[in-house]
Amino acid sequence: METTTRELNQRTAQVLARVEAGETVTVTKNGHPVAILRPYGEEDPPVFSFRTDPMGVDDNAPTFCGDPDLSERTGEHLSGFGDD
Image (cartoon, rainbow, N blue to C red; front, side):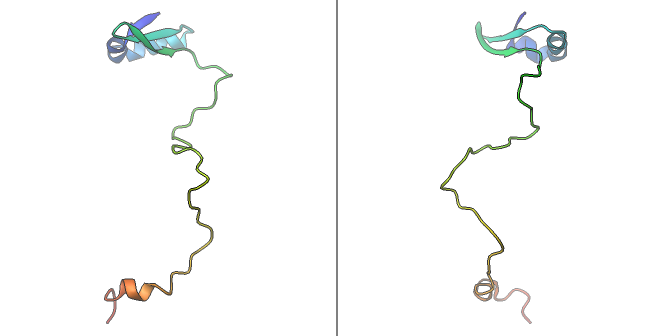
């Protein structure tokens, strides 16, 4: 089956019902294919409800381990807050 993006927008439930029934649907925009909807299978990777690694791996990114000792600097930055 082939459908346009507009038709998919207006009839999403019907299109997904056909996919669920085993049909593969090609979605087109301005006559060009942009997506293929097909039934989810066991060979597919798991789907997470959130992005697991949006930035990718960056070995140069700083990492923080343990609790930093900020007691030396609190006086200069917090003077006037809560002091009697």
